[in-house]
Length: 195
Image (cartoon, rainbow, N blue to C red; front, side, top):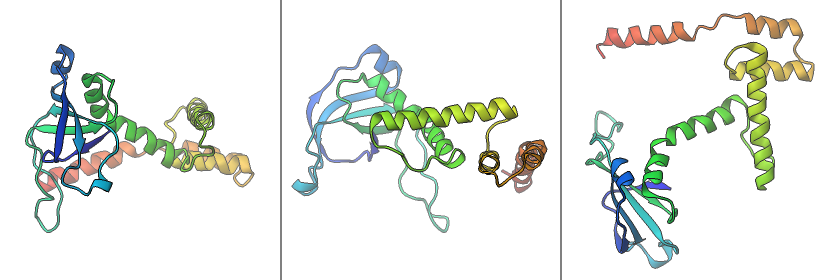
């Protein structure tokens, strides 16, 4: 599933009726289309594409350089293209709404736990690696009674390799957590700047 531009060119093959649940989830259109009519024939998708249009709050696009905007924002709708043809439209909308939770999980997995590469590409191998990472995270939380951080994982890895001593691990774990201090300082800076 991915988000596409609101002005994408397509030809509608099938317009689907919206259920009450889909309307309640903010879905305003559900259609199976052929995408890429303005592109070269070889660049077009060779499979059916489903467009699900969700109603959202309009906003201007942030970013850009030297005070300019990064482009047009959305006009109150988000257009999603997916190959999930048999999934209800409200589930597609829900997947999009929870995309950041999924991104945060994989960021944690890659950056904090160090799982940057897959050990195996087979489903069983990927599942085993994910289970091992989650179990390691839970064990660190149980042993230290703290949220696992990148430095805690590194310190424990050095200890298990024999590079760090037990005293160094204890010293690392006894350091005060200054996350709240940093957040309060950042908030004070934003207030001082008038934001």
